[in-house]
Length: 73
Image (tube, rainbow, N blue to C red; front, side, top):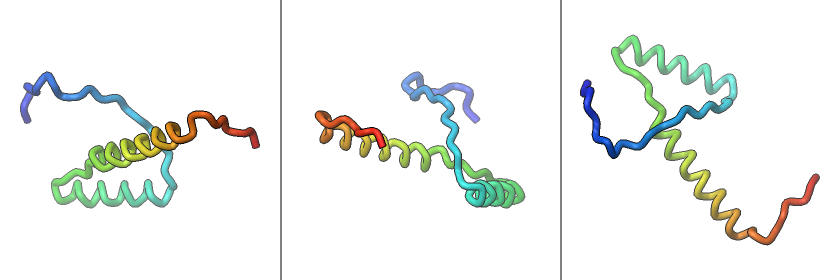
């Protein structure tokens, strides 16, 4: 493992999200199985891609609805 990294590497922050109990159990099971094989499950790239896509979609929705204000339910 390299101790030196390029200075252009993006800074990160922790984001916590709630997931259904069954999904959490599946994730933990896969992590355990991977660990028994000397591997690890890293979902970071998958989650970053999904969240970035959701943010892009939300920005597009906001830009098309600039003049509309949500009505309270």
